[in-house]
Length: 256
Image (cartoon, rainbow, N blue to C red):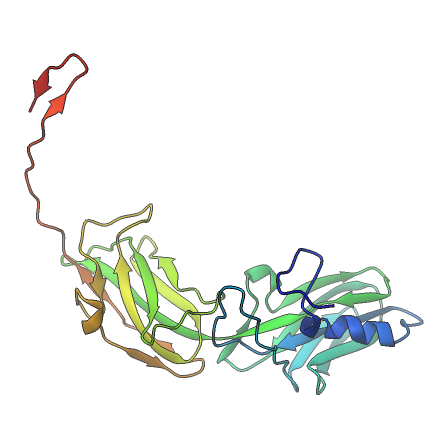
């Protein structure tokens, strides 16, 4: 059965290929069956209640499985599933052997390498999602060279919504450096956003390279897995202004 909106214990039927494999095969006589899928990156985002596009699973991805008895290499089949049978109990490390243009995992804990502790149960699933490893990085300083802590945003130059895994909104570190990650191939613009966040810098919104209008911003074209460095900003302070205010107390007295 397939549903459009998922709860914590359900999944779209197209993602259940590991469950279907397990149902059609008898469990291992000894040890544990370790298996899972490797899914290719998404490049677009489907918003609202539109049906999701069918996932594409990755054939021929190699995975190293290291445990008490050494390391073995497993390869995903034509359906995108890898499988190791009769795996003895112990601690194992699974690592995808993928090119640098891709990375794995929504978060650090579900990426590659991954850790599994097998206790002898019949079947253990560990699946992986791949993402494009596109990156844009740089530094933000003021005109004296002092690092600036500010938010940096990635914008699609074509107006399309980016997939949810893209790290498109980041805060610079204390040294002013930032890095936007997991970016699929496409055309992009970079901006400093000083509104609506906890950390603000007294400056105008700025688009690379030092433009105040999004129409004038530079467009960066990324290929699959490409990294672009040196997208730096120099941020001027806003001009200081003296503003007179009049405060009225509950008693009716007024002060300037």
